Amino acid sequence: MCLAVPMQITKIEGHTAHCASHGIEREVSLALLDDEAVTIGDYLLIHVGYALQKITEEEALSTWELLDQLLAEDTESV
Image (cartoon, rainbow, N blue to C red; front, side, top):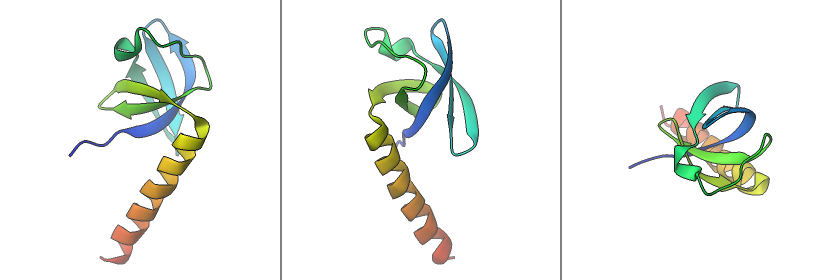
């Protein structure tokens, strides 16, 4: 199973974006989004250092809410 997490672009340099979410920052390749216009503040789905697609802020927040719920449930079962 693969997992892509939402992150927000804070800086763009060429085909690389600096993204942040939940206190974590990463350098992310934009190579897979060549035909997609992205700007600082946009949200992306990230998997192993690659941006897979641009998403809305609402989609990013909804995804993080679900991921937080899963983590909380996992922590409770230990």
